[in-house]
Length: 188
Length: 423
View 1 (cartoon, chains in turn yellow, green):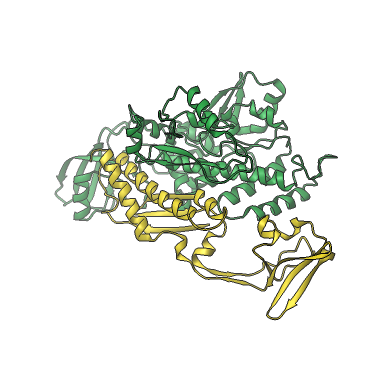
View 2: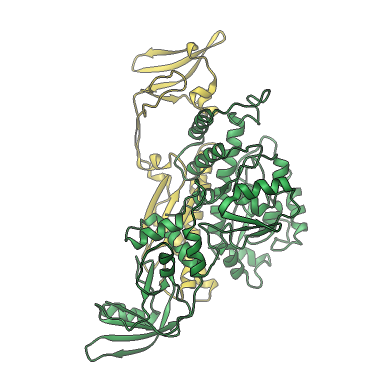
């Protein structure tokens, strides 16, 4: 879940009129910021993750700021970056504490099915670790062949990617446009 | 912090009534919308587990894959075993198909409802358009469904050019929905969603007539349970009994009508009646969010994320006419006084409500506000008294409300008295 605050000035959200007028101006400003954010997220590459994130956006304008929230797991990690490490919880497959992350290959059934390892129904006895130079790969016997599942890593680092969201300037501009349109509708 | 989506699910009442999907379809949409239920599931504990996970996913705290794992762990802990012959199928609560359908549908509904709440606040986009966000393996005939729904509502608020556009407030959205809700998803596993349509476009389509802004306000202000009294007299006695028991203290089933108390909602009450509602204990899985927020505010410990909850509570207290003038002493800079003279008085930023005393005020400050003929005052103190607290006698002006300045007088001691009235 990602939440950021963007300060706005009186010029972008005029402090005029009754409480009802103020509410309408804020609602319009927030609506325009949300539309910008929604379209920005939905246009990001990928099958469905970013489209789901676009549907999970909420924007509120109050207290001199926009609060922009994206209620989707993992968006904050993409935006701020960070290092993901195993939690140590007990694996449903091995019954032992998880010590390494499994990063699925692009064509792994884990990624295609959006599944966790235990959901693939592979017999733990058929799984093995291939130790190649510089990396360990989890694989499983499948008939006469081998199914490559993913890379085992002690942690995974994500670089910060501020392009996840529109720029603050773009969001402020969208909000100001919304407020202006609302003032026109209200004949202010 | 905006979190309409999470609140949508948290406000639903776990309703363990073991009925089929078809039987639940016959229950009025307003009752279904306020209930967290699963077809064929009569175990409240298991339902509560699904509800908890759905709320966590809707709030971005969990992925769907993580949610499946949590649900399966909860089912195992509850000793769940599917009926013979149903292992792995849709009736098996552990199956991926059943879990994904339940969680994804509820999360999508929470997000759809949250988006609708926000859409109703934006007068610059009073319309919306139905469009395909996600591909479907077997797409439904949405062209036919749109046409049938439009005709069924007499084209009320619907674009006359055949496009899939209509006002946000149009009844077509409810008619389009398999569930009878005004927001997506409009069917199980549907990839159809809505996107905004501008006021200019709506005007060109001839949709902006009459009190369209006021209708947006009216639909926006209704919480899930406000004004909800649903006729269930045609439900079978057994289901009615199960519903009555399942809804517990949050609703009354009387004379064939379900009337929701609207816990944590927006249904207006007098201060005394609302205080009585806050005092009631709720079934275990329903947090009394508004009561908790009120107590934290009185203790000076209200966190920022609870402010919307507190404001919902304050706004449901019916305003009353004060018996006489009300007074507030405050400290203002010359700039603040000038702003107030021009734009009126409103509670300062950071204050949830401004207290006005019925007695000639004493206290520190260079400005006295005399609220004359108050009709917008709310008796927040009555809520605190109902919880056993002893607030000072005061009536409150809520955040966002404004009073106009009608007179100004300077006292011999330099104190300035502003006479203010409801704007």
